[in-house]
Image: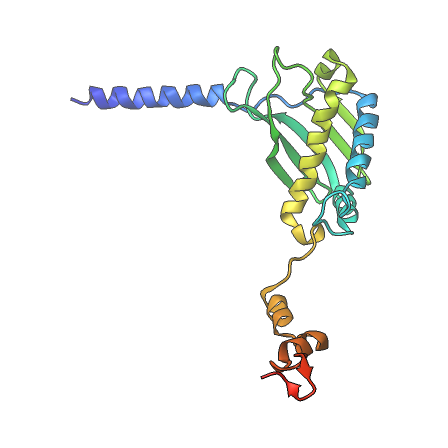
Length: 219
């Protein structure tokens, strides 16, 4: 009989439709502007860029901060959002989409593992940040960040800044980090002759420098 097969197909379709509804993409951030958040974001951004130096992070190139500023000047918009609807409580992380001035978009980028905010986690902002010349010029949200004091939002802003710069570091590591010695460089270093002092020391005859009496070296 075909009814078990039909029932299996119908059940599978029902489950697929339910999962599609349950895990559908969330609504975009709200349109309420927050000028204070713009000033806070730019202040944290400048701090982060000032620390992109070898003195703060050994291994960075002296041009790392310049590379980050050049990259940010090409960013048009960053939209931070939950991966799924708020009703999803498992693996529903905050991610971000990045739109560049050339129109290209990178979606669902890692944003530090923050969970989607809920009633028990206020203060994690779901934001749209518009950039111009490497700085935020407008930030909009649904206003939920106002449920907490401004200081509680700072760690979330730092996470955004850290991971948007990390995105470019992953694409262009040579623009941020000192090049490590190549195999050829290491071979050449070891193949170079030792200095004259070391050579003289290592090639001295076994009797050189031995104490000798009036009749020459002691036997």
